[in-house]
Amino acid sequence: MNETAHALGQARTLWGLVDRRAALTPDRPVLLQGGRTLTFGGLRDGSERVAAGLYAMGVRPGTVVAWQLPTRIETVLLTVALARLGAVQSPVIPFYRDREVGFALRESKAEFFAVPGVWRGFDYPGMAQRLGARGVFEAYDALPDGEPAALPAPPARTPARGAGSGPGADVRWIYWTSGTTSDPKGVLHTDRSLIAGGSCLAHSLHLSADDVGSIAFPFAHIGGPDYLVMLLLYGFPAVLFEHFALPGALAEYRRHGVTTAGGSTAFYSMFLAEQRKQPGEKLIPTLRLLAGGGAPKPPELYHAVVREMGCALTHGYGMTEVPMITMGSPDDTPENLATTEGRPPAGMEIRIVDGEVRLRGEAVCQGYLDAEPSAEVFDSEGFLRTGDLGRLTDSGHLVLTGRLKDVIIRKGENISAKEIEDLLHRHPAVGDAAVIGLPDPERGERVCAVVERTAEAEELTLDAVTAFLRGEGLSVHKLPEQLEVVDALPRNDTLRKVLKYRLRERYA
Image (cartoon, rainbow, N blue to C red):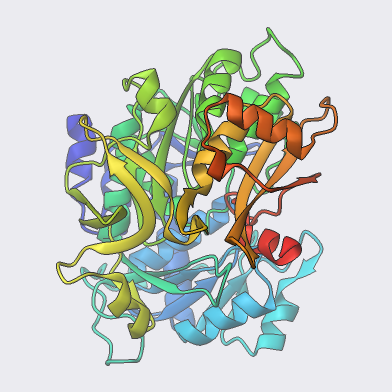
């Protein structure tokens, strides 16, 4: 990290980071969307006007404001304005509907709720009305506005709240886990924990002020502030995508000369599929790096991207509770980039306990809104229990081997679903794969492989798949006993993670 970025990284609040960057490079662009450009100075000044408008509405330090908005310049202005006020933000993914949104509003005790109006055919104000949301206002293309002179000084700390009434001192963010197996959990973050996560990302990727980034995922995801912090530290812009789809988005990547793109494993696969439509001609001429995280990365996908797209690929490991844990670096070896999740930054402690990855450091959340899961997730030494299985290499790189809940127990033997998935990705007829355990009266669980077939592939059979896996050296007791071929694996709407619980429900 260069000296300027390091100095900026010492900011204790997101607003402090915005203010310092605006003072350094006020006229440099930070956000690009369509034909619109917002500079760092414009981000600071515009956010102060929005903060003044919110203040006039009654938003104060510690006020809980939920927002469910697409990835737009206005969304970033709103979130920075709330940071200027010291409000507690509860971002909600735009694709969530009544059940998840209602839960988030109730649990956070949100006093205001910002929505986009009718967006992509869905009536958000109508949903807010059904849910009895308080303080509903639209924030799609028009934001509250006021005179910054009326604002109080930026708060250094969030006022403490009464026990059981919501987040405590310094907590300014409530992010929601995906809730794929139960109700979502409200994860409590401070400005500093999000800055620490973004600093890790920025430091690992070796970016500079000459780069042009891209945010193609929902800004309401925990990756949103990660990326914003990176832009603020290094002073380069990013192209925002309100709705991401290929090949339609390619024109914007090319027009703005994007140098670094990505989001998650599913994004790598989408870019690679487009590249294969025009072999020999670089998909995005200026692209030099794909980067992301949020889901396992098969080694074969890494090699295919580097070989066919002619760019580097670095992958990291993060979660809602810890936005950035490890990250691959462009100067890592190809072996480490293909088979590991990178290394942790200074200040992130990783401990492996009975195979489980546990974490302690500045980027770790403060716990959950609900005290019960908070008590369960931290061990006696303050390490967060991730539920992920892994190991550290001699070089300090982290290798993830699966999930505690994703281990298939067949006849008393533990089988890693990820090991089989990585091998299946080597099969030329397999576009993507998910391996699950299904109840079995004789074995306890049986191994079921669910695969997406590539467009040109011939029919896949269980015998052919198991023969391939045998050839790859997979032990006989780990071979799938059931094969299901699908047009598309079920995924969530944020980083396109495969929803294995749906597969278990479908095939059990």
